[in-house]
Image 1: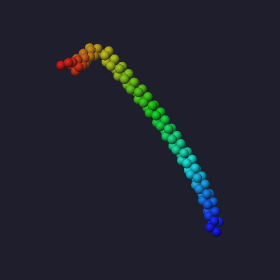
Image 2: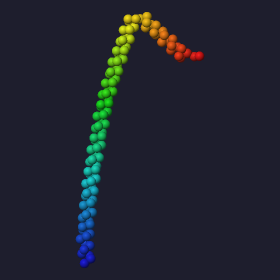
Image 3: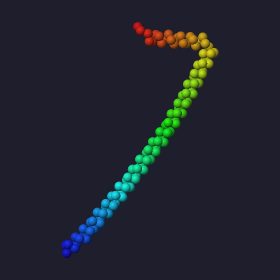
Image 4: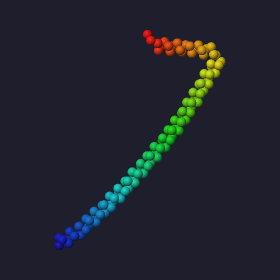
Length: 104
């Protein structure tokens, strides 16, 4: 009688092991898909952020260029209006630069 009881138990255990293998395979597939989806989302987010930062950097560069052009135009206008003062400031700046870099 012991042999008849173990035979169905062995078949039940084999069936349960096969079911566990199938479940583990399904879980592995699900985790792989989730990992791929998260990776894709992270890559997409990083690309969007990079594009945003690139656009912001370009905008800041254009603003800096416009500001530099404005300051250059203001300096040129100031030199045209008061050429003697501009020459005096240039001489003073040269003298100070000479004092700072001169040997002692």
